[in-house]
Image (tube, rainbow over all chains, first blue to last red; front, side, top):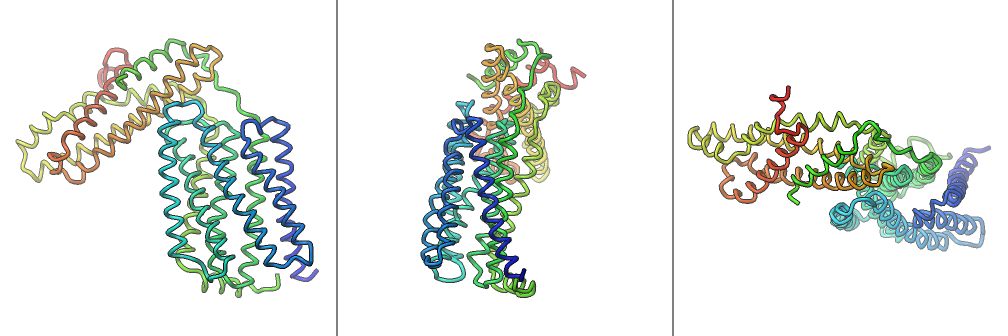
Length: 255
Length: 195
């Protein structure tokens, strides 16, 4: 096999394998009824599979030009970005599900943070518009901006939960973590991709982008296959102890 | 691949602006933090003893002294301005440490409350829910109080201008920590008394 064939084989493997795993993930989500808890994530997984089938088909048809392929890639990428925001919203709701206070306070803070990150993404797009004026570069810049917002939001969610001692459910945490890895990998690779014009470097980067898919899909499968840990029992604790703590805390908060 | 490593390295170094490399560094930092949080967030047993110790570690009388306006006025009136500023800063830092510890205690309480929420006893679960909510509020209030303290630490002489809101926060923080200390001992004991 010539070196170029190795590259083609590796790219095809890294392109196809994660989407096969996404199929496995969809089956897991369906069989474990997790699509009821995470409908947007389920839709995202199905969408990614459909997107792959479409793009792979277009890639395989010789009559389809590179430009036509890029149009399809752009359209599907934009919808994919929108769905990821939906998934972030879904995991944040799952995290804050039990706290009325946090549902208001934390969600407001997250909205403010999203606004700030969006501003940062727009500023980046204005002051670092990429290597050339080609519209493809514009797509990479948009994806880079979206990755800034998504990565920041997920990082904030993870740090916020740790700061408050807020406990995640395993599935929600796994989805957030996988998406966080995806967003940070997208941020790094598309920041480089928007600036690059050299063909060898672009091809290496494409391998990294497709390779990172394998990582986050594996994270999702790992977390969704693992059973939810059993609730911690408080048998050693007298029931009135909880009430005492609760009463005192209510008093100190001046309610 | 048909291209040499040198060609790729040259392209990466030569073409990419500093902004892109900065974003790459940010992405790696974010990734590192996420992995760290994932590793540290593995299920930990709920440690009531830890929560209790965190609360008991707060020496309430010392904290009340630190935030007492009369004490501050006494120091201001009796010390040279330079010495007063230095002492005010030290007292401010000490207060921040107390708030930090109160925040840690509330995090431990939140973990305890969330574990109680999962109890099969509905009454206990409801109490756990309330405890968790209160612990979250307390945690956020310690942050707010800390943020209000910072200007006074950086600019000790500014205290006169920022007095009302700062005092509000001081008093609220004092009340929070004072009552937290009471609930751990049931009789208003401070650490030194209970030891």
